[in-house]
Length: 473
Image (cartoon, rainbow, N blue to C red; front, side, top):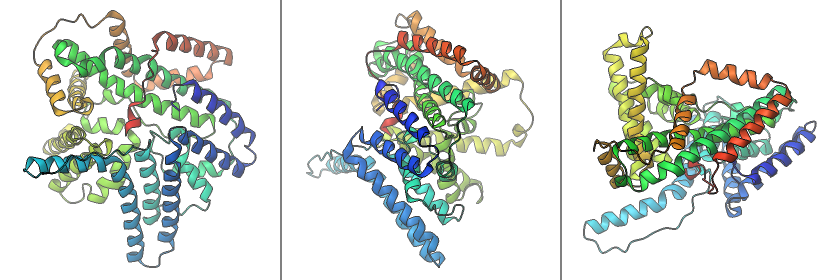
């Protein structure tokens, strides 16, 4: 049930009215939201519904066992069991087929007569996101940062809550569980803000991301040798904007949907291509995952507490594993290693020249830093998008060819590409003013803007439904 379909619109309308009708009965409302969330998940494949239920239930029980354990050693054993179960679940569905395929290929390369084995394991949608959320709850209880939640039903709803279920943001238990426990209050300002986020998300996804994907990105990455260097570069830039508009568009719709139900999610993107360094990029891109990796991987590895070399190692390993989290392919591993190496090199450069931390650089230097950072990110996106190293090699081969013919860059395509770039670089303060102004308009004026947004969506939409990029993770 994709966010950009009428099926979701009808589903959400029913949930919206029913949940607010139950607002004065918070426990019954939680039960209803849980049923609605499970229905939402089952719409993909009902066979995997027991998976999310079992995963949530086991983590809920293990967190209580950890809290009641009398010795530190016992608590640690329960934690290890939790981590093994969660990572085992993730590894089976995401990496078992890849591991078996690579192992048989390696054996054949060394001359062993091993038949090629292909495991047909479907990847449950959203498994990476709900596994991380549930595991973070248990780890927080182990660290005594969070008391075990009393309500089993509220915990199940926290994990399965449909706006963030299949592609995030990764919401921390301390942020969401208290909101589910209390009675919601009707707020017309939040109603306007929620509608604003949903409309913005749909425009990003359909009018910008999907248009760029179908009219340039897919074609360039499928047959790069048929395009000039300029067209391939435009295709790579378009992919950077597509994945941003697609994923942040999903997040915007998720934030708006939750707000309309009286729940506020944290922001997950902050104009990442405005960054002046790779370190800043990861503070702005997929913020919920970046902070999760920092708190539950980088810091436990030692963070920056054990000297420079180990800090660089920890940065590299965190991003390497972050790349592997995105998918079972060597291209993702290389993408993660690439960003890990860039983060380590930036950290080294900053430590060698500490004066770079001080003061505000003049705008030409900031513009150059933003341009360089953006293009470094583009290099990584080539590996992220390309289906193989050979496909990535062909992209880079065309990029250095120096050809500049551009008959495939039609004016409508360039217009959409330009709008995506320009709107992305709107300063954050200006965007906040625009949002406040739109949300403060009278309802008839807001309705007129929504109608205009619908017209734009209609004009730029395509008959082919493009799935959200991060559903595959």
